[in-house]
Image (cartoon, rainbow, N blue to C red):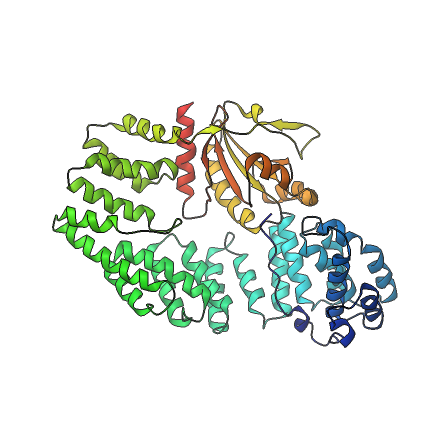
Length: 508
């Protein structure tokens, strides 16, 4: 598993009035028994609890994140004893609840609830309850708990950021207002820049993206704020496609920062290439484009391919223009790429069906059988196999309840799946974390997502489907063949998944 809960640094500092960790507990070699004695004297020292739990976990042979739930569970007896000994201490239940939350265990909730009952101002406990509620599929509860964390510690920009983000899919207007307010309130915090970054990144309106990113650039200098720096990459890509002169100006302004020297050079080349194409100097444009090397994962791959196609077509090499776009479309279809294929396809006398056939001929080179499976259901004692889905297109995702990126992708999957209701399309999610099984059924009921959850583990996923992290997604055709692999879906490319599923449905 690759998704872990983000742990805020300096939690102990958030608990105003609690004792600092005694000197003995600060010694890196303090034993479990010594740290246990420290807590006996200072039960409200969260730092001592952290040291004790860390030392205890190190003392367990083969303890790891993957068996963290089982290891932390070994501490329940000791913490029950301390809870009886120190019934007014909120830190005692919080320490154990936090330890369970850190390993994304369903066992965290009762301890966290006990902690906030004893101390309603315990902001980190509210935060952990919020994240835990998301895993249970209780999105309203998650939002409420994060609001209480922010109210308990209004000086913490992290709580304010996550509380604002909880409104993205329920009240877009409030979400935007809260993130703008966050930026104003915390002008020196990365969280302020992060809020503006996501406003820009999640917007589907190019003008709004530019406005937000320019505001972020002015308020949060990219040289100082990493989220602002990331936003400038997106802004540069937008300008390069819509206004290359502004891309040149942006790259020149940021030229002193790492990676921007190359962007400055690229922007200058794109301006020249546009001029050459307008002047019908296609050979010169093609030669310059041939020298452009992009990273493996680049926002500009399709854009550069379209320019190469223009130049090739201008030179009379229409087949090259067509084939270049078809290769990209076969793996990641978009409407813009299809328009280009139609232009260059029709120039060669190809109709819609012939273009489709050409695309599928490219896909066939990578298609291979999906590994068979027969896995347990969560909704009954039965199983589901790949064979059961024969005749249907299958969207298969590997996930687990604690995976934030998985939960972030699900709304976009659902938006697309809703467009195929009543058609031969199945949606399956394989949970790779058995320790989180308890979350799964409540998560499905709470969110209303339509996928069928199946039981597995990380070793099986890695061995059988070569999964190296979650989410990992596949699209399987009606005959059990892997057609699309290694893709991610968000608000910007739901249409790509729709085109993928639609094209496979047509093939039958």
